[in-house]
Image (cartoon, helix red, strand yellow):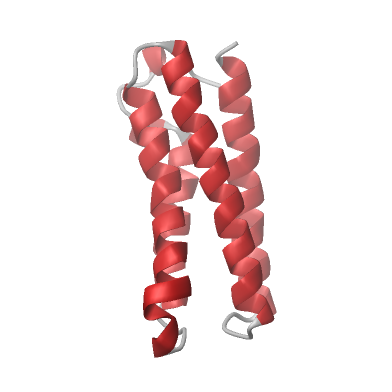
Length: 122
């Protein structure tokens, strides 16, 4: 895995790229949720998805290793939160199983990449 020193900006991080794709997918799938969920589950899911990439971005921009790790760990927590919210959406039949499975796979990949990124920092 490349370190921050070899990358010009955060958009070159594979984990950010996958996270960005997930943000777009989250917005797309939540558009179909019932209107009464707009200020509850829809809002929570969108904020959690955005939090993943926002914290990766902030961590990338930090100079110290502990600061970088801190934000990457927060991103990992947001990925866990979004995993739970996708489960809720599936269980409430707001989301088809196939779409849930695809988003769940993306979240697993993002979590693994974040774990490797955190480990690479020592």
